[in-house]
Image (cartoon, rainbow, N blue to C red):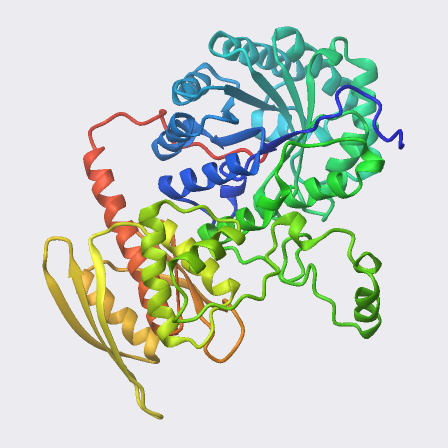
Length: 532
């Protein structure tokens, strides 16, 4: 047995911050229903803590944290707050319905942050940290404290701040590598220094939060665990600020696959990793790179003749974990138009998805329609249907008909017919540089919602000439950015439905803003999220 770990419990707490730090990645913002869907998936995955958001940042953040606190009961639900009474009170109110709430307070400690961001001396930082933790303890017994930019903070001062936070009542001390600056050996020494020089540190859980700016977030997190940390803060697919965060699926499978070295375990159900990864990718519109460790399309693919020969002899020659360990489907079962409800239901379960009856009925209807257009439906096709059915958002506009004419050397012409929930049916014709451009112009004319397209992407969902394509669209409107996506064998239809999803979000956002126009904000003013 390895002696890699020498302190405390053999259990590592998995703290997921996909809904807070992960959502801060450009283009990854989620609606409240999407956040709830991800939170439920994280609960099924078996994470210990879900950081649901930063309640003081905006009314939307407050409401999302409050909704997760009400509806997700198994994990601890955490809310982020600066070390100010107003922030902490906002977070406490948002977390009030939670079965197991946690207040996570943070304050920058590095010299560069003290000078340029806070304009505060060391003594002021110490006093503010004590005050923040004490206020948080007034509302919650479970309080986590993060000295932001800890990896660039002087060791003696960091130890001082950590000690006063523990004395003030913090139960978890999180050490963030906020800008992804540290390296494994240096970071390990930092944790060993704190364990040696901070009185009472054995009474709290040491945590680690790493960013991936230099590509070492997972390595640094694992090194911290070896040095005594017992909580890892991470996100699904490693999404987050700038280059992202420590990847949950990678760090969990490292601890699982190398259990003989780490002598540690987590409470994560690893077979739920792949479906959860796909769900977050679908909702955020962030495709998973083919070569992504653990959940990427190539993670278990072998093309080299030498590798294939070894694999045929014994899988362990070139695979250190089984695809089924992470929930990656290996079934070659192909469904078609003659497949019934039972076959589809079983296949959906094999892919790791659980659907309510209403959701399954929608999936089955779309499955039959798709089966009429495709000869064979593969795992990726079924995944796309499931992810779409669970995420369908009601809105005023629906696409009834789309006709496109394209001729070489001439502009494309699109005719769209839209139905509004007030029973209006509008038909518009527009021309454009291509079929998607023409369809977009017709939709904008019909809905009256002006959008500026920033980015348009198309990805094949499966293989073959009749593969479904996923259209992902990023637009600006009313000073905000929106994202929409849709899947179809017809790329123009997928692109049109993606735009309608965006239009519906804009309409719903405008109505919500009008209703809340005379209500007070969740806090005095919007605040920037921390990268702690």
